[in-house]
Image (cartoon, rainbow over all chains, first blue to last red; front, side, top):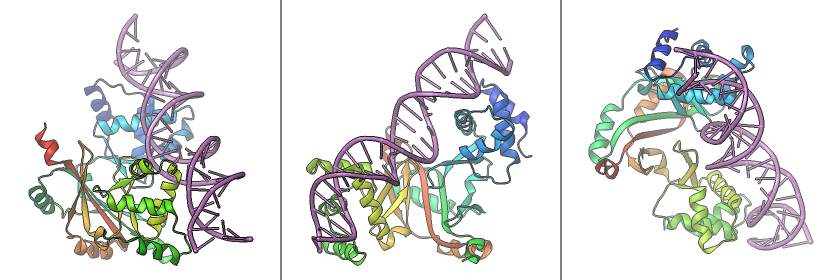
Length: 146
Length: 146
DNA sequence: GTATCTGCAAACTCTTTGCAAAAAC
DNA sequence: GTTTTTGCAAAGAGTTTGCAGATAC
């Protein structure tokens, strides 16, 4: 587990937030999940198994809080729901491959955009703070099964 | 106007769709708009002025139809609503600059991603059909007014 | 004439919010 | 003890759908 509960507690306390069981449970679900790009509903489904009393609204609030604390990054893959993934320092330097057939999201780490960014900043007088690159297509499995 | 009503009629008839006043009006609103990235609500607001009887559902249905006919391209800038723009052959080769302050969307035409795509296709066995590159930041106007 | 299309209202999905009860510190 | 947090249900935004009447061809 790359992200310890201690770190979570630290980050919460720094901002006067409390470490509640729900927040701990949601964080644990995240660290345990093999899939890294999770929606609120995904998390809700995972935590409800062992903690049926937890509410969907709490999941939403917790994910938003974690995003505000730079623990998670909120992302949008255009399917009408937000997804969250751990906000590592590399998160801005990998790109997403989104399968149009099965919806799977893969990552491709490689940052070729730094030079493009500075070109744009000069030409457009637009101050870039983040970028997002997505490739849509068909994963190997879906290509094979057609 | 780059896109004539004749072309629209042609494309519709080819697929056994009819050219209705509503479809014509919506297409005209699109060609007349200085802003190129329009939401359903944007279009609805524009057409309602002269045609108050037109329904929002019709706007949605028409935009989706146009997208299916490759007349418009449906896009998602992460603000919770879909936007549409004319689907020119260059549409896949320009990228978007999205201002986090005023929400304005600008374009940056330049395609440096072809070589990156073939690298990814080889390394990941992922067949790419489209890509999308967005830069988030602050436009010149918003940077100045801060 | 007939199949398509429209407008309306209701339904739907994802997300947010108001509030009283519960819990962290 | 007090402030934060929770669960619930209701509201909210954007979009879709069912249906009866209207319309393009």
